Length: 322
Image (cartoon, rainbow, N blue to C red; front, top):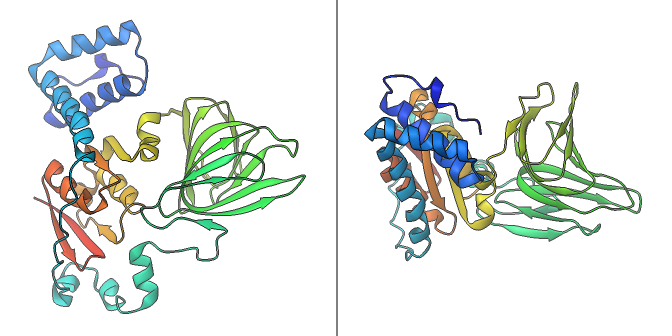
């Protein structure tokens, strides 16, 4: 992450300060900062009392997430009854009309790819040993197809997110195919996620190759890339502590659009979450959630972000501004 305090606006608005604090905190937590970066952080903290307050808030949020792991699971309250009239009024009548069909219920629960070779349910984590000695750790709601032989090792990531630990093998590179493109690795460790026809790759060890319709990219250790079949984004520094937090039972977001947070939650709890307000969906937030308490996620999100939740059965939730 490149942090350049000299470019920060003056005077800073509260949202600007929150975003800057998130960048600084991610740098300190996710890497070994240089002395120059530590000096820059010290100067930024001293420049405005609001800077120190915003940074301290993030430190408390990070510390509180550890305590959250030890909290007892509360009783699940009975969800309110579905109101068709209110549902229609909120602009999603088509979804309501289809609630009685099994296909829509499966979609709302996040079920899919029933014929995949390997798949995880929503909220499930699973580690799989591959025939070549490599391993793959699957996040919730993830599906894979496997194709291994003496001369070939190939995986198709149908949906979801997976962390690969690839070992060298005489059959050549491990190929991971997605709708967005193909990832090739002889050895190394990396996390790959798929969202429709777009994929995101973050490399934690060695180098990985990304091949799309019109581009070939070598992605080195500590770097991240978002790509689709027709477009490859700019290479970024991977915030690995955030990207890989799910492997340790947490979801960590710093300065992230709320819509991105909500989309990530779909892997870890049943039901769909909608944000009717585009401005609210684009709001950038910092949040830490406990994967071992999926029933608490929306409550934590509501309290931390001061938003309002409206639930229609346990499968549909709308988020509004408070």
